[in-house]
Image 1 (cartoon, rainbow, N blue to C red):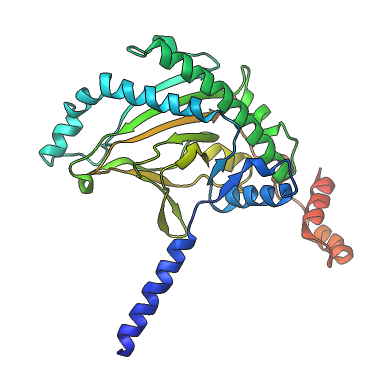
Image 2 (cartoon, helix red, strand yellow):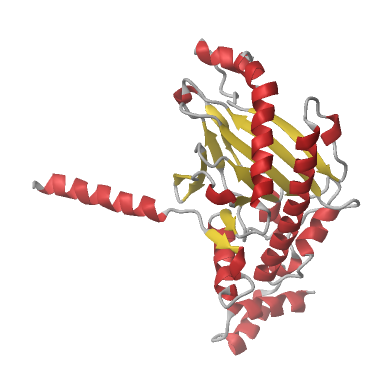
Length: 320
């Protein structure tokens, strides 16, 4: 084999290996009460720091309930949303190849849950879907609160810090974007949803188990998120988590690709700060600031061979 062809083969092999390794972390919540708790907590911490997203299995939510939510949402889309979407301006624009750059190939509605629900005001929702969705969200909020406490534990801050920071005067804000990314005849011309980070806090996604499309940006490349088998919950962190953690936990860039072969379901619930919540980095996660360098050197002289974290904490106490 010529040298150049051999080199090309090696480069392709290395790329394939790297792509295979780029798999979103899976956190098994069933391990949190067992011998592997510390390992599971470390995996969660790494996922928040390095990915800004992960999947949760054994989350404790009844999977038959999750299946019912998906079934009823799909039924609602077929009966009330599908025809109007394909008659919409974006669908006509795609046919005429006359799309603007700010178009998204999606059909959506939004449900507010807390502090005040609007689910009874949304037209054409069946009573069964309202009831099942409310039951699912009650469980999901408990999962979000549990997850926020685990994050706080990993960050070394009070376990209720995230919840209290999000609460404002009426508690955290919780809402769900229900979306279908319809089958698209020309997916090369449009995104299902353009590249963005999420504005809020912790996002918990119940997604399609067959049709792909979700992608996250990691280390210079787009990583495909596979459909969620066995009703795992996909989680990503939003901009306010990055602010609150002083950059420790990232909000990751992501997008949805349109698909030629099927329609993708996405039920994304946002556990967000209240509108009047005041957001700032947790003081414990801030670096020391506004100190004299000589004071730092004096402390360094006696702690040079110790961990730097406690040294930073000492400097913060000195400044305060």
